[in-house]
Structures are given as C-alpha cells and as structure tokens.
Length: 221
Image 1 (cartoon, helix red, strand yellow):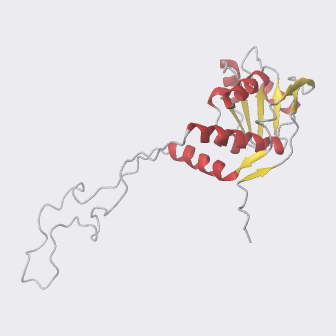
Image 2 (cartoon, rainbow, N blue to C red; image 1 turned 45 degrees about the horizontal axis):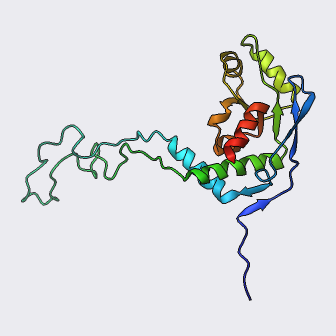
Image 3 (tube, rainbow, N blue to C red; image 1 turned 180 degrees about the vertical axis):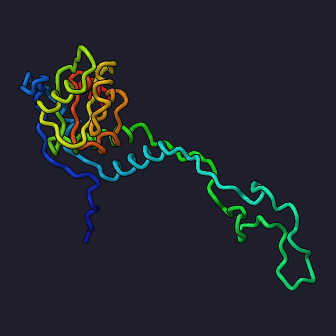
C-alpha cells in the first residue's frame, strides 16, 4: 500500500480582490490580485529556511577570544621540567590555568550565506499568502505628508485600525514619512523593492501602498 507523502504547502482560500483604503480609512477602490501567485499556498519549510538565512546574514560575527599565544605574559616556564613532583607546565597562560588563554574560542567569522533567487522569491510569496489568509494586509493609496509629524502618521494607522507590530511598505521613501514613523515603537518602514520574507513574518500587520503592491507583484512573476 502506497504511503502518501506529507504536503509541503498549506493551502487556504483567499480573496483575490483586495480593498484599497484612503488615508481616512475609507474604501477608495479595489486591486485585483494575480490568482496564480496569490493562491493561498504557504510553504512553511521554505519560510523557515529563508528566515534562518536572513538572520544569519544579519549576524555581525565579531565575537573573539584570546588564545594562549595572544594572552599577555606567560613567557617564562613556571617551574623546571623535572624534579618537582608536579606536572610539567610550559606556560602560566595555558587554557586550564586562571587568566590563561581560551581553547577553541570564537573568532571573527562571516555567518552569511545565500539561497537561490527562485527560493527567496517563493519564500516572499509564501509569507504574503500567509498574511493574506489572516487578512492582515491592507493596501492604501499613496501616503503623503506635507511635514514630518508623528501624530499625523499615527492617526493614519488608527484610521486603518492597525494594531500590534506593523510594517508600512511604501513605493518611494520620503524624508517626511521616514521622520514621522521613527518614533513609533511598533511601526517599521520599508520600500517595496527591499521587502523580504523575514520582514513579513516579523510583523503582524502589513500596510502597503497600491503602487508598491503592483510593483511587488511584477517582481514575483
């Protein structure tokens, strides 16, 4: 009897018609999502691998411990080789002595590695499908602020009923939007061209400009 393999992807139903809101939180139109891309498939294994890669690439890798040759002192043999009844010791900086060097300690290294481009693209698509299934993606018209005001930016998020940790994805980063959002602890800001799967997974809600979503869809094809 043949044993069926466990499916790698979780499949759910999502609406391909996504409402587009204005900055007052009212529906200003709709955007038709590509049903071939946004089909509700979530590859959890690929998401895990992508998240692990992005986190490894963000590690600084600067930890360093001194070996016996790098610790100052210890140039003189503590006692003679034979005749004392004690174990032979060549240096007071050996790893088993106090103030000695570290054996097999960390050294600066690069933890980064890369996944195939297609795998990164599929991981981003899976993360978007996951948030669409949860109805945690809201598309908005272009966000424009005449002057950098945190209060004004916060009101926009309140109008959209955004709660928890959120990411605002814009098509082009402006200085006023950047300065308006930096004091909001639970809000992060990113351009659509730099969006990756880890960004989506680390935020509960995604607010994305319509133009940024259209360009992101073209990027995923």
